[in-house]
Image (cartoon, rainbow, N blue to C red; front, side, top):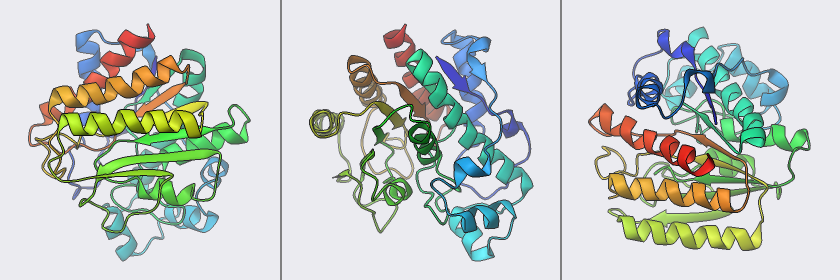
Length: 299
């Protein structure tokens, strides 16, 4: 498997966000320390081009964003103070997922060590998401006629509202979101399949809902490619999540998705998404599980 690594994270980034930026570098370091992957499995993506962005984002939003012309109010909604470093970082993340999609077609599975920016709408950003990496990569695959049906599995605790809006009227993309019913965003969009979970949902409840949903999707959509948002803010230790999954429950969640993709011969791209546990080590360890599983299942 190939993994998009973003060295731009070593540069200064705007402060004021609530998630630990260091997790991205720590994930890479831990993967190498454990021997889950080797150095040559990492690739440094380029930077996203305009034509790939505006398949899913409006040209007006792209020009305003990249020209650093967003209003202060719009910047506050994204959670970032905008500058050139931030925009370069975002475009690199987007390109990482797009290139990961190409690798997944060859290897079966690929990762973006960041990504999962599912709150970015076609015409605006919010919730620490400026552009939508899964949407951009899915549209690229479809434009290149590499696949004809794409599934987006979003198991972050927050609904993939931007993704749902972007593909609202596109039957080629099936959006599936399992998320906290009472969590951000307050106003949910309509995905093709939404499972809204009550506060304190346990491992068993979560896994039962997930497995039933994957069976339904197999029957009604028959995807040819899968993007998986594997946010670890579902953990009971998460400061914002409100769910009650254990570390083992989170591992079983990832295992269910990866084995389902593997058994259906579906190329898979995984992005990390959110995670806000008090201990950064808990966040990193939860993320690392999905890489271990992919290695064991696909090799």
